[in-house]
Image (cartoon, rainbow, N blue to C red; front, top):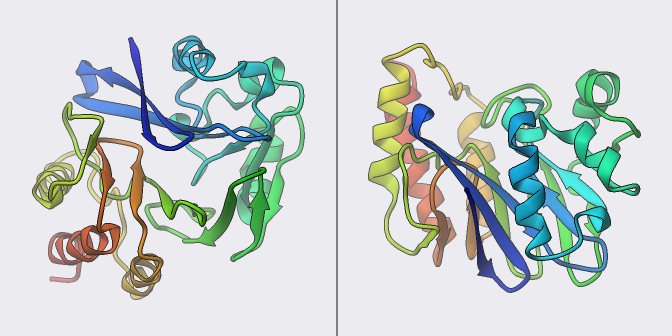
Length: 242
């Protein structure tokens, strides 16, 4: 089953727990004049995600589909969404559009956004932030919703296991545990640490988000800047040069 939780006004977390992966897969739906779905989930999850969206609004009215990078859980059912919703348009970085999305996934061309460009959906303003190789992939980007100060984090602040929908508690320990487990197994180097990683994370901290909309694990509310600073320190400790 996919749960639906309103984590902020007009912001809904859609979450499917997959025990075999010991992981939650979350999408985020923003209810507005032009509804936006951030992450589609894998192709196999499409019926569950579609039905979860239907608890909030007519899935055929989804206008924008955002995601960080080209990966199955980020945009695996993009085609299915475009077949269902006649105006659904991917929104991503320029590199994402020209390298992967238009050629491999989209039925209709993506809207490529430049770093700092704003997408208006009605009441909400989404600013695209280019973050190459953060969390991973050349085309990576994140969205920051400026009116409610929500940062759509993708795989940043990744928490393995099954957790509550929303928390204001410190999740740094969960993040550290997950990173160490990944580094010890086949998913090592899941997040690369380069000379550009800390400056990109510091830019996110400076946004002072109130809500961190996280793909895997609990949505975090409250002092998002502090959470991101703590997670930056953990990432550098575990992933940085030895």
